[in-house]
Length: 268
Image 1 (cartoon, rainbow, N blue to C red):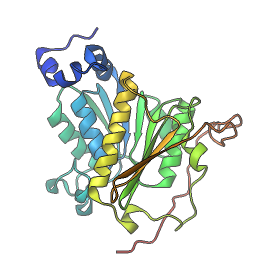
Image 2 (tube, rainbow, N blue to C red):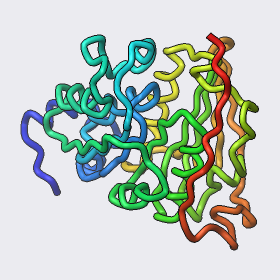
Image 3 (cartoon, helix red, strand yellow):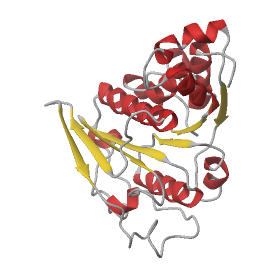
Image 4 (cartoon, rainbow, N blue to C red):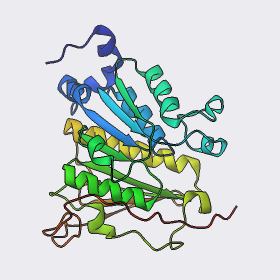
C-alpha cells in the first residue's frame, strides 16, 4: 500500500472517512492517470477537482490560448492569463491546489495522427471539447485503445453526459452515429452558454472519473444524463450497445480518421 504523508492524510481526510472510498480508494486515486481533453468550460472544473482529489497523474490537452470571452465560464483561467496557453494557465492553478500530483501538458489540438499515442497512456479520459469532430474522434480513439471515458456537451442552459466503457457499454457512436450536417446544430460561440452550466456538467464528469477509479457507485455506462438548468430538470435515458455500431460493433473501425469540422455561423 502507498504510504501517505501526514500532510496528505490531512489533505484527503474527507475522502478517507467516506465509507465507499477510504484509504484504499484514495490509494487508487493517487495511482490513477487521467487525461483531460480541453482546458475550457468543462475542462476547468474537471481539472480543479481532479487535482484537488489527488489524481496521481493528469494530462491536459489544448492548443488554444486564453481569450477574454473565455473567462465567463472557464474558471481555471483569470484576467492575467489572457494570451497565455490554456494548458500552462491550467497547470499553474492545479499545482497551486495540489503540489503532490504530476501534470503533463500537451499544447496542441488532437487529430488522427497523434490522439492514440496520447490517449493510450491514461486510465480514463475526459472529453471537454466543444465540437462534434473532436467528440467523434475521441470516441474512436478510446474504443480502439480500450480506454474508458466521459463524454460531455453543453449549450445555452443545458448539458448532457454519458460514460463509455469500450466493448462493454454503448459508445458515443452507438447513440449519435455521426456528426450532424453543417449549420444543423449551433455551438456555444454562436448560441451562447450560461457559464455556471459548464461548472455543473464539469463537476459531474469529474465525479464520473472518481467513481470509475475507486469503484464507488455506478458510472453512467449505457445512460445519457441531460439537464435543463432553467427548469433544473434532470433526465436519464438508458441505451444498449449497438452490435452494428460503425465504431464499436462487430464490423467496427480498425483505424483512426479525422472528421470534418461542423460549423455554425455566429450570431453576436
